[in-house]
Length: 90
Image 1 (cartoon, rainbow, N blue to C red):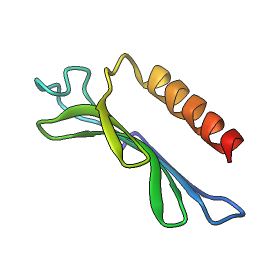
Image 2 (image 1 turned 180 degrees about the horizontal axis):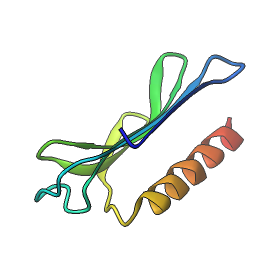
Image 3 (image 1 turned 135 degrees about the vertical axis):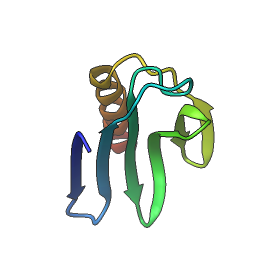
């Protein structure tokens, strides 16, 4: 594992970020596997991850869409931008 951080916020919501360095493959040509998630009231509200054979994708309030990985730094930026927007809407 390259990076792992789990934060439990005062309202018991969870932000967990994990990245791994893996051999480059057709679905992970960049050599990273990742899972970034925001859980509130026991449900995933937001998530970015890469599963075997599926490539990167984004979860948001029950729906799923493809995510085109550019870099770890950009992935973190996009996740935390989404997270700030979601928390500001609450």
